Length: 113
Length: 109
Image (tube, chains in turn purple, yellow):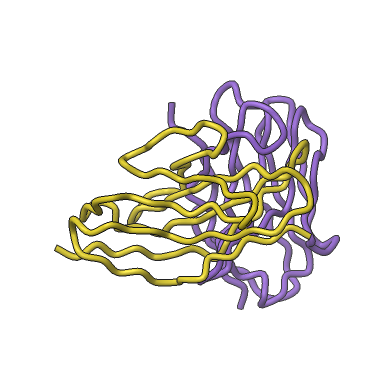
């Protein structure tokens, strides 16, 4: 098993553009969580999806949205990008919803110029 | 609001010395606490979960509700313990995991 996979690994965008990040969970895991990690800080919770429904949302503006597909993969979308959105975006999967053991992907590094 | 504080951004010890990474939290409910670790060029991974009460790689952590702390300890540090350590707090019956800012541990030979 490859573990949690995220694509792309790196991305460069300009202000005002929109971006879509993708995540495939570990086989058998039904929950996906998204985190933003700014340099020098710990990961910050953005969303959790379980069985294709949003189960939790962090303190992020409506420019951030996500969805989960029938195969449990997930997309994170960010509209109207700001310089401050530059960060490492981490995806984590777990067997079920809640705060059980989470398995992290390697992340997508987003740079907004 | 829940909050996790790791007071030391950097911690340096010599091989064989004891190490303690501090974590304090604030949360109105009954917390679930974790330590996650990130070794160089590897992804973030779970080290310990307080409800498991296990010792992993020689590390232990005890939840002290009176002091609202969940410090990570190891009696004899090894060079391979050098990594970034994050303390994390989970909501009871919730989905949010709140991380501290992390402590970079360096174990010198």
